[in-house]
Image (cartoon, rainbow, N blue to C red; front, top):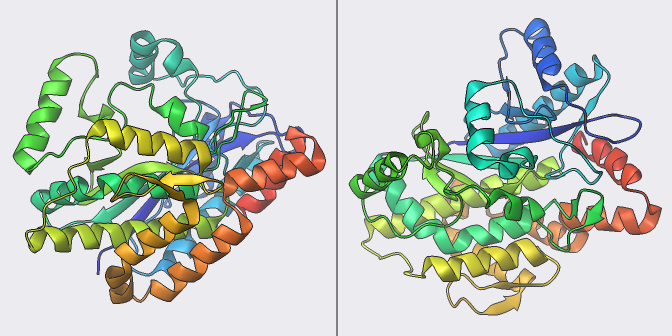
Length: 362
């Protein structure tokens, strides 16, 4: 059975005002002091962010337990220095992002200017194990049209600098300011994949292959495909659903490759339109169907994804759990819908943040 690991980026906020706090260095120092052997937390580009990574898991129950534990530990370490964490993909309240003290981050600030300074967005990256680089690239080629559905499911960033952005996942619009981000063409082989990356680095536009921000890429550190399209999810259960579906997509794509089935040859132009539509409407409107690239209600497209990965989910024992989780999500809303409902009820972005702090650890 393929293993799955999750990286989540959390927003550090003041527990009373909900305003972002640039305290990641202090939180990391406290985490290292309190749990020196854990080493699950990492520094990110901005001081208002904190990242953690789970261990590879085969069981979705174990994965959820670790996500919940890491979120609670992050909140505990943050609380000891006067802040807390929220699983929000953008800050609803206005913020002036503080870039971390790091030569790499300074290079990015010099190279990309305001795009770096404003890039305070929190994502969720899912790692799914693959048997080889050839399998990994074949999987990435076949995932392309389905990734927009994961974006819609995870959408959790409707507010930007104190205003409603009009998007469900505005994080993804900000993320696309990086020159290497977004959907990709079909690679065809691991050799062509690596040649393209070498050519990209040779341009000097990006610093190194660590700045390859494809929607799905081969991990630099692990024998995995890394899927990078999702907002950090407000609820831990949604993060597990995204991980379940990601593993199902990887297994389904690998089987198609072994059977000699070619990937759908949608152009990058069409994929970008599908990606935009998912970011705009999330689960609240229409999406582009990954096969036909025509508009359909979001719930129909989510069910099409479930149908696409049904055999793989059944093989891991996750099918009933995934169906139930999708129905609950369609009924109760994703993070963007929850945030907007909170704003409509309270009229206060501060209250949105403080309630999301509670939901982060639920």
